[in-house]
Length: 126
Image (tube, rainbow, N blue to C red; front, side, top):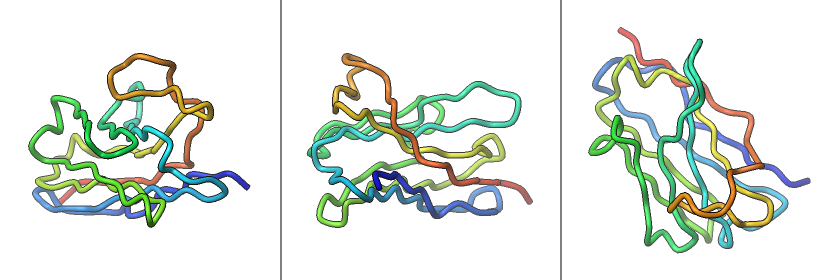
């Protein structure tokens, strides 16, 4: 069964850190650009970060630049999102995503993701 599975979410105090993981099962991630997205209650889903197949190209939303780092370990079939200096406004459900035909790119060319994980909840609160 083809799946993307996120993990690593939780409750953290402002200024704290979390590391999210996105593990693929049923297929290998190494041919796919992977994006992290988030959706806060009452808000639209937004792109957070993106990494290309080799990890050479990464992109970040302005709101997380300098605080979040995306990386991948193709041998482990996993993409990570290290989140530091967390703020209450980072509270959201975080999703990883890709496109089944691999035509999703960090540049914005290609097509949007059509393959999503189930999400992991991040709550930043004191």
